[in-house]
Image 1: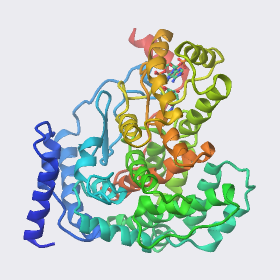
Image 2: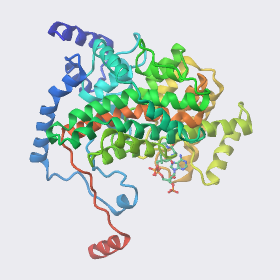
Image 3: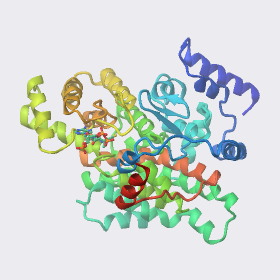
Length: 471
Ligand SMILES: CC(C)(COP(=O)(O)OP(=O)(O)OC[C@H]1O[C@@H](n2cnc3c(N)ncnc32)[C@H](O)[C@@H]1OP(=O)(O)O)[C@@H](O)C(=O)NCCC(=O)NCCS
């Protein structure tokens, strides 16, 4: 891109930001760092050497600096609060929520190119940001959209593998199986077998990751149409962007649903590295398993009800409230229903978080979408009522660290409104989105030469002896 086009891009970005005075310094940095290359791979190629040097310098200068203390509670408590993992693409603040390469969700909505002015960010633009730390211009994003469409073809054996499963198999089982079948194509695996030098690992990883990101919506849509629409497959549309194409292949073409899908894919893409799916992808990748193997493993973690399956659980739970009490449920009835759920030994799905201590900004932006497009939807109104009722009840329990809603508390009612009513399928949508974040980090894992992950484990006996010695 020419210097002048670069400057005009920069000024466009600035004018979109307007008079906002509260932009963080990282946003300003990103504005100054707007992308210059039309091709994502070339952009990355330029960035890698400087980031490799940066990591070397950090190791050399700060290698012995302590980042915290490990307590027995942390070891027994699922490693909460233990800093132990490098993850470049995003960072989660307990109070403020997620920042993708320094940009909050509202900042992404302002700065990243959209399909039409003022619309939701295009997921491709977020992918560019996650991979490079730079805000792309529309031309770069359009080129990436086209590249992803070109990479989206699926070998027939992938469909046959999925078809070998009963149609009643959980959609996440079918999805993970489909990704495993795609693995047959892995360029990283082929290159490794041929003896590729480790300094070049990132290159076939990049190819696998871009292919995988391009392919997963097609596989996911196949599963949806197989399960719920008599196998009538809708092919990719060459004129549509990534998020819109996904909605289109699922069978939803209203302009609001296309916008919803762009927003959905963007906000579900990444949530720093410690969550189950991201961490699993990184862990499996650290054994130099290729991106398909790593991502399939991540999906299997996402399929758990305490993680990505919660979006399915939320809609089913909300529907069970309506079935039992009707849509015009009173606040008292709703409180009773929440207590009934808790007293039967279940969690209230969509509330609580391992890191967040405030309402998830991914929840808030979905609420804004609903207020704009579907304010009178009865299930949206129920979701709003739950927000007034659930937190105080969870606080009353006395043990819940975060009583506020997370991303999953809201997504289902939006999808349901536009006709995507099959809640069991929802985690697949989450999985497609996660390919953007997990794959971006996998590329950097290989580019930075991050090592095999291998934390130390101990037995209860070891803990007892160690603590008695220290007491
Ligand atoms: C997300 C979640 C797994 C985080 O777990 P965590 O980090 O262990 O959370 P906490 O430290 O607050 O948990 C402390 C206790 O409160 C309980 N708790 C937390 N959130 C709860 C909820 N929404 N409903 C009922 N109980 C909850 C935990 O189960 C735990 O109980 P225990 O000590 O009897 O095992 C948890 O909040 C949860 O199960 N939420 C519902 C599922 C969900 O929405 N998942 C999607 C997350 S994005």
